[in-house]
Image 1 (cartoon, rainbow, N blue to C red):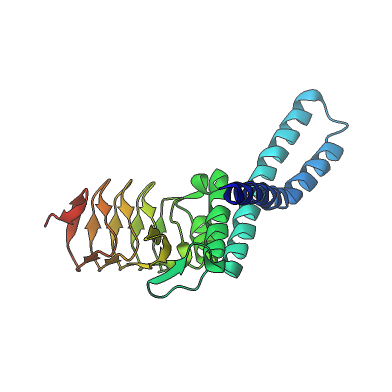
Image 2 (image 1 turned 30 degrees about the vertical axis):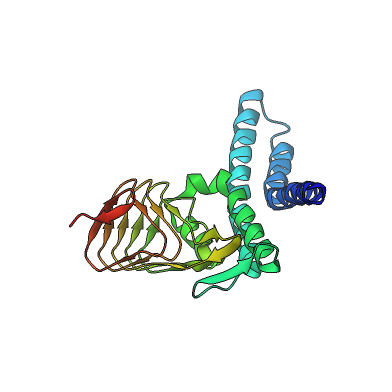
Length: 232
């Protein structure tokens, strides 16, 4: 138990350091912009100076957010597990560490990502992370976890705060299982899609539904409930 406590402390310190780096480096362009605004507005009146600095701060925050998504996405792409079928790993393994780090990096994007979904910026963030995203698909959720193991077909819509997970722990082992969503699918807001799920084309998953692990939904069906079942 004592050794585990030490590991927790070390892990927490590493997490804090990673957050400092991932949040801090993308701040540089915004700080540079603010410095330029300070110098530019030095001779202006109080009101004009306040407006210039206010615009510089808001623009700097936007630059920070976009830089955060780009930086985090690239790091996730570099280290994420390559998963094309269900795989099982010991919890005490290098693969589990890679999975945990990518999950942390994704959570660190939440302060900005929640304001950018749905948008082309959020879509390219998910693509950088490794998500296979079809043309015209829209993701209105910041909790598409394990994006590198998610495939979403063309013209599909992921509703607000819908959760997609490609991981679980079974029998003391980490299980990574891809989630595949077909074309023209609607995933209702607040719903949960669990690991190993395969959803066909033209499917509707109702609001707040929970599609349990390793479920296959055929083309054209409507599912809802907890656990989700075929409605029609």
